Structures are given as C-alpha cells and as structure tokens.
Image 1 (cartoon, rainbow over the protein chains, first blue to last red):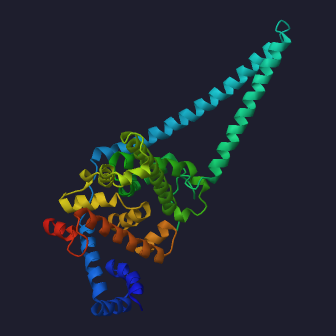
Image 2 (image 1 turned 30 degrees about the vertical axis):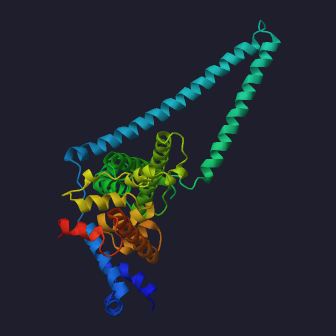
Length: 148
Length: 212
C-alpha cells in the first residue's frame, strides 16, 4: 500500500471507523512513515479542537414558539393561495363581463372593438410566452429546493 | 422501517416537536446564523408537509427531509453570496468582483468576511475562546459540501454509514470529503496565523484554549 492509500484510511482511523485488523495495519504504517505520522498528529489536534466545540442552545421560549410560528406560516400561506386564486377567478369573470358588454354594445364603434380585442390577444400572447419561459427554466433548474 | 405518519395536523406537530432541535442544529451548521437557521428549518418542515404525498419510500423519510433542508440552506447561502458580492461591488465604486484580488484592501476585507461570502457568528459558540472562534469562522469559509460533512460528523455525531445514507453517496465519498474538508480547515487556520506548517497558530491557539 502507498502513502496515498493510507491517507484514505487516516480519516477512518481518526474517527474510530476502522476494524481491528485495519487499525493494526494502519498503526504499523504510522510507525514506519514519519510524513503520515506528522499529518496524523495535525489532524488529531484539529479533531480535538472541533470536538470541544458546542453551540449555544436557543432559549426555551424559542422552542415554545417554534410550532406556533410554523403553524402561522402554513395558515398564512394557505390564506394567500386561496385569496390569489379567488382574485384571479373574479378578475377573469368581471373582465369577460365587461368585454362582452363593450363588444355587444351597438353604440361603441367597430374600431374601438377591434382595438380592444387586439389588446386582449396581445396580452394573452405575452402571458403564454412568459409562462412557457418560466416552466422551461424551472424544469432545468438543478437547485430546485425539493428534488426527492 | 416505516416513516412517520404526517396525515393529520397532530401527527405533524408531534413530528416537528421531536425533530425541531436537530433540524435547527443542522441548518445552523450550514448557514452559521441563528435567525436564518430557525427560518430555514421551519420552511423545510413546511415543505416536507406539503410534499409528503410525493415521497414513495417512506422509510427514508429523514434522509428526504434532510435533502429538503440542505437544499434550502445551500440555496440561501448562494443568494447571500450574490448579495454580498453586489454590496462589495458597490463599495468598490463599480470595480468588478474579479478585480478585487488585485486590490490589497478588498482582498483583506474579503478574507475577513470569509471569501466575501458566509458569515459565521462566533456568539453562537458555548464557552467561547479564541481557538473556538477561529474554527467557527474558518468553518464558514469552507465549501458547502466540506462544511456539511464536518457539521454532520462533529455536531450531529453521525457515523460514516449514517452520513452516506443521508448524503445518498457511498462511504468512500464520505471519507475523502472529510479528508479534504479537514485539510482545507487546517490550511485556513494556518493561513490566518500567517505561519504555515507544523508550528502554526493552530497549535498555539490550542495551548491557549481550554482543551479537554
């Protein structure tokens, strides 16, 4: 085995993840290789330092409020989704009502009606184009938050 | 092995209460900031609840939840990095990001704030001392994947097998990632002390620190 092979075992030795036979073989290599021994010593010191670190726990108040904050978030998200859907449905309904009134009104000129219909067609094309682009990028995004 | 049943609000609440501290600790190890860790862990629970029906292998629930949480954290870090880079660009009066390397002042500021990217707040460490502060800040300067294995090993105390299951990779990948992560951590600490090699500040800091 080369030193490079032993480097792969170094982490497992450090983290106590080797079986007895592997550990003995690795220790035998350490005894004969000053370079690996030096590197191992540095890693051991680093591990001791990292192991000695603990993080401050937030106060109990934070944990008491954790679930209620999450629940509020879920409730609000549901509220937003519902009101957005309702707003879209109502706008479409009243929009069509308005357009129907204008198009069927004999008092409104032909030019005005044609202009209004062209405007609507233009907006529809824009909407479909933007939507298609968004769907295309979303489906190719490697970092979508939910992948599995 | 069966996953949790998240069918009702009560079951979901029980699941959240059981895992909230762990989810927060994982997020904290990845983003290094308390407010963001709380926010991101809550968002991960919410998304897991929303998409639970899509999970076919319920036995792998925690690994699946972990993927949601880490992806949220990584995506948050990328946004934060872009925001910081923009700020830096504004402060430098329109200098390009790449140009800052030739500007000693900017380079210093860059290294102090962790490659102009992630800020790890040392206030979050218990029983602080100089060496712990330095390690925590150095962790914030590691690549995401290297920081992740250090966090899972040292703050979550996971075995190599458990880490491999969470990261959907094999044991060999975990081992080599840990090797490069620790190697990089060592380099950052040595570079900070300004004297690379065996007699670096890493060991001096240890003498001054409260070691077990």
